[in-house]
Image (cartoon, rainbow, N blue to C red; front, side, top):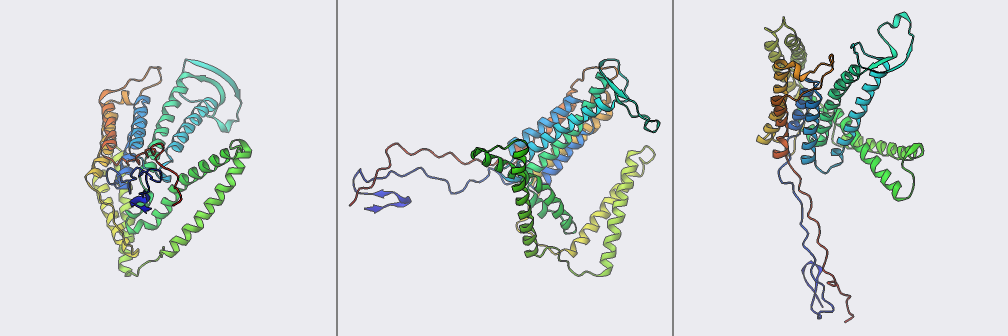
Length: 401
């Protein structure tokens, strides 16, 4: 009896024949090449900047929905990409805490719509301005809701960047002067996704064994293996960094080191002074030139500082046209929301005294929708095609020859 290609037997009559199974693709590749991770961070931080320019709950909800749609369309199937849900839960917790503080500590905002009156605790004279309990008005809760939504939206945007940008590829893209600091940041950013993945895996394993995964007992039984896994990863990471020569520096002349320190320090001071000038009315004339000069000096210092860290990049990420579109869409949202905050302050920052329902401004809302562009130009990983079941009766038992 002969055996054909793919492990199918040929010959021997119909009783010993095995029908060929469905073809399995060798590899499943993404529809498009992955984007530069810096483009995702620019897009997400720009959406977060736009969120800081408004307290309108409708615009904030639209920003959160925009980031959620892009994450659902472009998030890859990787352990570090599963932290978006945790950031959403953290944002909801921040919102609840902000409302709790408004109820417990009160607010200086005057209000006439009293919802409930709590018992008030008398405080000493040195704690003037702080109130525990007392009247809880609708204006206080609405103001706290607006402020909590702003911070929650900012956290959701940061979670979107964590779920879309590969931290290892982001580390490769950093200049040599920031490599050591970048390693620390990347390790800190990847800790939460790995921790969440470990907790989900251990809870699923306990449920399969019929053991409790909730409550104090479940927390203790899950927390100890998670801590053990984190320590093992730390040891493995330290060994990998040592094997790759992490921390080695090259010898550079003293003149280059002094020039690098002067450019970097002077550039950072220039950035701070220029930013302060842009935020104040008196520094509007010198703010932008000082800011640009500080940025140029800081970039020059970083470029010179990279000589002390000899590094090579294997297949470096390219900042292509799609990366420009993704980053530009986020920058456009931030710029247009900043312009709208100065043109229509009442619409983007609705008041609570008197208490009125917020309205959705049309052109700022249309500007927020520009942030959906990455969902159409970003990478969308193609999922493996499902296997078709073999025809019934196609596999027959081999007869002895």
